[in-house]
Image (cartoon, rainbow, N blue to C red):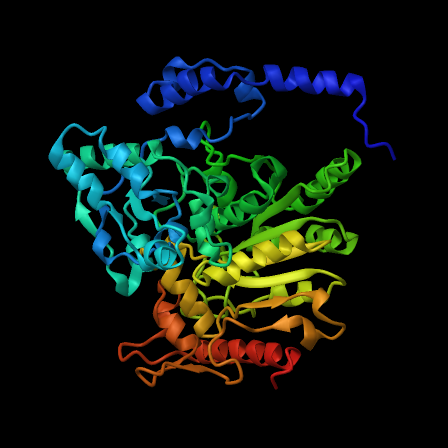
Length: 531
């Protein structure tokens, strides 16, 4: 089959691209009207609306500074440069950069006010990772800085939770004075040159977000505060963009929360090509895109399908299964919230036993969901020659490695991720990182990688690395002696709250759910050759 694009098609494509949207006009006229509140009255219907076209990265023009009363403050003397806060932020509201000391001094000279200049200098610190180690090697160290974009921060405090014991971030109350400072500081950050490549250690995968090629999700999306899904999307794009570049990435998204908050007209956070498909057919849509790309000689472009557990485990599973059977080079990112978040928290086959959800409401006779959870990753492993990973954003290196490996795998790849939905799970806005880690520790959502390239047997291919106490039934916290199991996890989330009496004793349903999680974990141990 020819890989040439016929001249007529090429001319039509060029005409379409030239006339589909004037980006500068769109940003000024359309986005500007939405930002100042006049869109509903002043904007006429036009071709862009009719075609559902949104230019790339318009979310960058959105201002969320009115959303929350608090904002994170960076305490540079406490920072170790781990990049966890930058990685875990769901809104691209906290970013980092490393700068040569001479370059920093030159930039600071441009600040006339001495007090402001001194304060800006304090934003940059000498960490062991980016300064001391490189100084000892004779390479020359760099100053590391963290900066918060006040127009993108929703005040969820996820970054503070991710920072953990380092205590390099704390939430402070907004006022007119500090908001002006945040704007000035972030402007300084943007005007500083990109992080030199010598400071980006490719073995320290979190460093990828120091590269401009990795920042392909600009924020401005309408996701909930602290959304567990958005963090995973940012990480997938960061890992893929770092290796392949933004021009070599395409997304086909199934209807769900992800399509709502990333394409609520006129705001779009993506700097890559994307299209939204129907709830049940995104993998089939992607098969058509992949076939055409391959016909055009674009085999190197990475194509990702994005969908929730409803789209991939339920109504769209047949489409997903057909895609896996095709052997086509398509990657799938599943945002597993265990409910249909987009429709108000309906139960899906990804929901857990006893979970309180719409269509499975906890009442007097029926105490939440009666069905066992469908294990998508387990089912995907049973398809021939498919790369499968189950992971979470809290397991940073594990998720990044899964994305990198999936992109390299010459065929279908599925990355199933635990993505906390704060309002439906009944957890606080800053708890996505914490809950994702607890889900793995408690065997509620074990992490693993299944790579067909590793050998002919399942136990050669399946690795449970990332789970604590891999050979034991349950993980026991060495500091407290507490056994961490599904009951521990269920106590921490509102969706299971009705299953505990006034003394904290679990219901029969919770004990059954605990056994279900143990059975699934034991099965994985057996398949991996650990039992």
